[in-house]
Amino acid sequence: MDYTLRAIGHVQAARTEAEDDDWGDSEACIALAPEFGPEALRGLTEFSHVEILYLFHRVEPGRVVYGARHPRNNPDWPEVGIFAQRGKNRPNRIGTTICRLLRTEGTRLWVGELDAIDGTPVLDIKPVMAEFLPRSPLRQPSWSVELMADYWRTPD
Image (cartoon, rainbow, N blue to C red):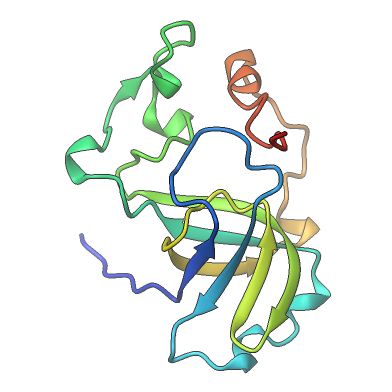
């Protein structure tokens, strides 16, 4: 079954290329689509964080992975299924990031640590509530810790 989604806004950011690391100091603005007024963001600034769902719009359909691969094509890490990693070449090309909410102004939302590039279509914005975060300890393999070691690093 197919579904159609429309972008609710677009990312405005200094970064124009999707690189794997150094997202720690990134700030971006999400400009809502014209059909949304400022009331769509009313009350959001009472939250410290938001979850942004977006489309990896530059991934060519022919590069989508449906099976397993080495994360970042690194043969030192195990070959794992696309749903056991967060790579951008996903079947529906949907990304999600929990970001610091910096401020809102009219129909614009500023966030910190959004790993999306300029022009990225935003599919949804959700407030982060503690009750939706994991209710038990997290577990993850060592390769994923290694992969993420520099992801949120602040570049020199």
